[in-house]
Amino acid sequence: MRRGTPLVDLSYQFGISVEYASSIFFTVLRKLKKTFESKETILFRGSLGEDKDRPDAFKPFPDVKVIIDGAELKIQSPSNYKKQGNTWSSYKHHNTAMFLNGVSCHGAVIFVSRGFEGAKSVKDILNKCGLKNYLIKCCDV
Image 1 (cartoon, rainbow, N blue to C red):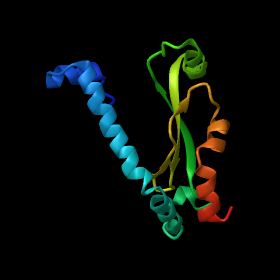
Image 2 (cartoon, rainbow, N blue to C red):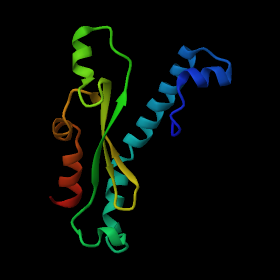
Image 3 (cartoon, one colour):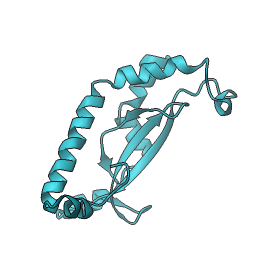
């Protein structure tokens, strides 16, 4: 996953079909999601205790708790035309899925949203993904 190796290459390397490689990939992805989903509040709360050893670049910004960024991943074009329009990204010029990521000042990933259709704006995703709830609970924003 980290290297972004295409499923076609993985299927060739392991001598399996592309469909089976895809099935394995998504099974592992679902397992990772379930594992980290149950620990999200712990990871997010852990980021709040890092104020004392904050990196120099972030010392002028004591109120920064999380750095938010959107990640847009290219997906196959859905066969349903309505879904094609919902996943089309005019920015990437492909059908995409978007995720909102939260990173602590030390570079630890402390929040990853569920996937959203690529046509959604980052503002819409921020309102729907639940990150604001963590900020309100943990940071008294």
